[in-house]
Amino acid sequence: MNTATMTALRVSMTGQIVLPEDEAYERLRNTFVHTGTPAIVVRCHDIEDVQCAVRHARDNALVLSIRSGGHSGVGFGTNDGGMVIDLSPIDDVEVVDAQQHIVRIGTGAQWIDVATTLGTHGVAISSGDTTTVGVGGLLLGGGIGWMVRRYGLALDTLLAAEVVTADGQALRASRDEHADLFWGLRGGGGNFGVVTTFEVAAQPVGQVLFGTVTYPAHETAAVLRRWRDHMRTAPDDITTTARMFPTFGGPPAPLIIAVCYAGDDVEAGTQAIAPLLDLGDMVEQDIRRMPYADVLDAPGELPPAWRPWVRNRFARDLSDDLIDTITTGAGTIGSMFVEIRGLGGHFGRVPRDATAFVHRDSEVMITTALLGSPDDHQRVASEFEAFWRALSPWTAGAYGNFLSTADEEDIASVYPPDTYRRLAAVKRTYDPDNLFNQNHNIRPAR
Image 1 (cartoon, rainbow, N blue to C red):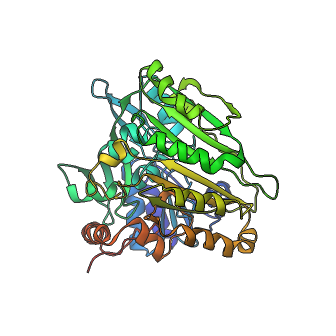
Image 2 (image 1 turned 180 degrees about the vertical axis):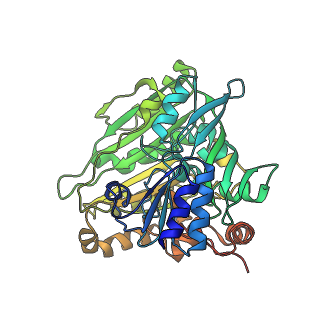
Image 3 (image 1 turned 90 degrees about the vertical axis):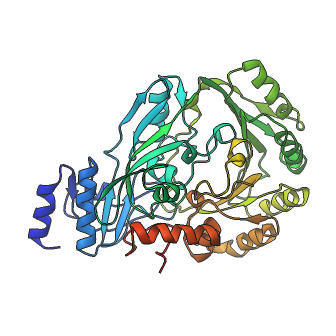
């Protein structure tokens, strides 16, 4: 990039341009556990800034990474030698229609800010798990939050989006405007443009019942069976997740069931939760009422060398055989965290083709994370692959937001063939040259 080009970009923007020689570069070049050396980081403050940045990247043939919160497990939010568009300054959260609970959210906002702001209005959106996750990446990929059974995915709340496409145009996508793009944005990730603002429908939510129930490790398989049976008949208001933590060579870890009841009736919530306190020889429980914002975890800092290796798959039926295979395999890798997220409810009643997220017939999502450094992972890679091969008869599909790889198998798992073809047609319309390729990439249809 020559001086004249850079000067032209600077004068056309209100946002901050950060180059390798600038003091802020070291803080902004990396994302999550991934390092990068971009040639330029553009901190956009509004949609006009984004338009300028996109045109600059296109005209100068720069690799382009889009960053909202920066939690991409694959490292999509940075690159080497290209441009990073940092959307974190676009972070307004505004209730624009208090009667209909319609909210406008800047793509760079973090979910704790969204939850806290909306909580003062008595509404909420089923979002992610942690406080610092960015709105943009989560909403475009899915959003399997603590009210997924009651209100569905975060992307199911989307009413409209302001998008900058590869030619630098600013579009509004909704069911009535650019409906094909609107369909693709809901689950298609960052393949079609840079979303600057989301318009979503929040739901009236006051305080929720939230906490965990702990059972001894030797009861894990039996407790999981009873947990599954209860969740098959439980009301939509309750969402639960089963967690098996790594042992790192120590004694087997207890099974922890995390619970969120988001209904208005405390007595009904207590009754819905009661069976989860009697799944086995309970060790302890800490379920209590709290604001929805308090449900979100504040993530701790990972050790410098760690780079979690994360994989997930969906299962239509959490069968006894699948439970046995999970629990047996989980004990063979001391550095592996295993989570089984209960789905169903409203999540499963959304038609498969309504959005680009199509795995609606799943009873659970199974996620594993190997904790440690890449060298640590290599020492257990064969056991890790064997674990997933053992699960393959019962599992299919994947959730892009919970992957740390982006190979062809991952993309095929996130987007089945019929979905991929439809997305490729949308890609051809809005990004025919595949400028937005730092993602679980959809190639434009020919």
